[in-house]
Amino acid sequence: MHVEAHKKRAVKLIERMALSGACNHRGEVRLHESLDELSTDLADYIAELSEASVKERGVFAIALSGGSLVGLMRKLCDAPFNKTVDWAKWYIFWADERVVAKNHADSNYKLAKDGLLSKMPIIPSHVHSINDSMTAEEAANDYEFVIRQLVKTRVVSVSEISDCPKFDLILLGMGPDGHVASLFPNHSVLNERDEWVTFITDSSKPPPERITFTLPVINSASNVAVVVTGDSKAEAVHLAIDDVGPDSLSLPARMVQPMKGKLVWFLDKPAASKLDRSQFSE
Image 1 (tube, rainbow, N blue to C red):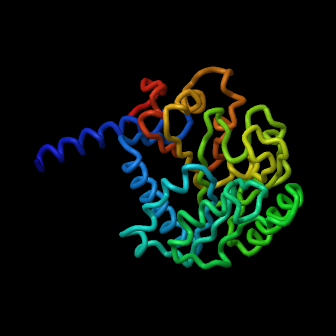
Image 2 (tube, rainbow, N blue to C red):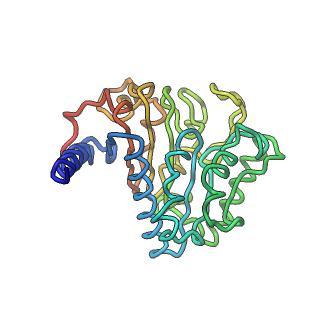
C-alpha cells in the first residue's frame, strides 16, 4: 500500500511540475487533482508568504475577495497553520466588496468573518473592511483614504515603480466571464489609472453597487494568486492564460500581470480542462 501511495504521490508531483511555471509570462500554474489538495496547497502558499513577509518587514498585508475563495482557504484554521502562522502580524483588506450592510448575505466581509476570520486569532483592529453606511462612491474614497494612511506607516508597502500600494498578497477568484475583483469585461473601470479604489453601480452580477481595487493596485502587489475551480470557468481560464491572440486581451483576468510581483494560478482539473498543455514546461 505504501509503495502504491508513494507512486501516486510521485505522479501527482510530476503533473504539478509539468504545469508549474508557464512559458508565456502568465505566471505559475498549479494544477490540483481535487479541491482538498488545492486547499492544502493554497494554505501552504499563504503561510509561506506570511512567514517571509513578517520576517522581511514585520507585517503581512493580505487582500481577499469573495465567492468560493474563502471556503478554499479554510485549512488555515486547522493544524499546523493555526499554531504556526503569526496571526498578530496579519492586516486584512478586501480587493472588492459589495456595498451592502456588513451583516448582509452578499457581504464579502460577512463571508470571510463567518468562514475564516472568526476562527483565526487576528487582531480586530487589523481587519479593514469598508464603511457600510456610505454610498458606493463615498465608500471607495474612504477605503482608499484608509489604505493611504497605512501606506504612510508602511503597514502596506509602496511600489518602487509607481505610487501604488504594494500588498504582500492579493487573492482573487475569477468568474466565468473572466472578471476578477469587481472588474468586469468591457467596463470603464478597467481603464482607471489614478484611483487605487474605485466603485461601480452597474455590476453585471448582483448586487450592482461595489467597490474594487483598480488594475494598477492589483498589478503592484508582491504576489497575486488567482484561484479558479469548476468547468464553468474552463474557457475563461484558457483565454486568461494561453497564448490565444488578441481576442482575450480585454478579459479582466488577462490584464492581471504584476509589474514586479509573482502571479500564481491555483486550478482544479475541471477549470484547467481547456488549457493548452504544450505551452507549459517543467
